[in-house]
Image (cartoon, rainbow, N blue to C red):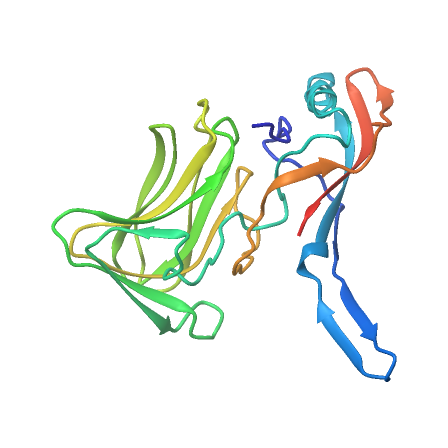
Amino acid sequence: MRYFPQLETRTAGQYPLRRERQERVVRHESLDGRLQKYYDSAARRVGWVLQYEGLTDAERAAVDALFAECEGRLHGFVFLDPAANLLRWSEDFSQPVWTRDPALTLSGGWDDPWGTQRATQILNSGAVSQGLTQTIEASGHMHYCLSVYAGGGGRFRLRIEASGTVIEESFMAGADWARYTVSGRPGVEAELVRFSLVVEAGEVVYAAGLQAEAQPAAGGYRRTTSRGGVYPEARFATDELAWTQQAPNNNAAVIPIESRG
């Protein structure tokens, strides 16, 4: 697979970053005056305008190499939205995108850090650690951050795994809500990356706002449902990259990208 590269800062974008979404409603008026409207889900599009300043020659070369391989607009690549949560259903662990080990019991509707009842109680009744995992289509060479809000005093781990390489941290949740993170770059040839919340044997953890991002540190939490920040069919929205060399080893460009929504 082809992947849009991260910069040397281990991010894909710089701010200001613009993201646009297009939706379409089809309106049909028959000869007898009846009016019908329906939502055309196949027409959904999302686009980004990446405004780059100060890119090194190596960073520019990585973007140029992908552009050449894709032949401009012709072929697609995997794009990890730099302003999104890569995980789907970030608060509904009953969805099939989540893999749950058998000794875990989940109970939703608990108080959360935002004053609502969107947290989940996760009980491990087994004799060994048990995990809740979601796998995304992404490169093992990228840098990722996994974060969660946790409370209730239980012991747990956050884990990032790609092709057998594991990056993880152990935590003891405090009585009050706090955000916990693990960050790292597996650095292996892999096209699947797994993000896990692992609860230790016999422990109870209250969790909310599970989020994965393609960057070194956690950004603001972004709640997701069926749509996460992984776009496997993204394309360049231009047939020419217009670079400006502002100084030696200092490049700038505006690069539009688009994908089905």
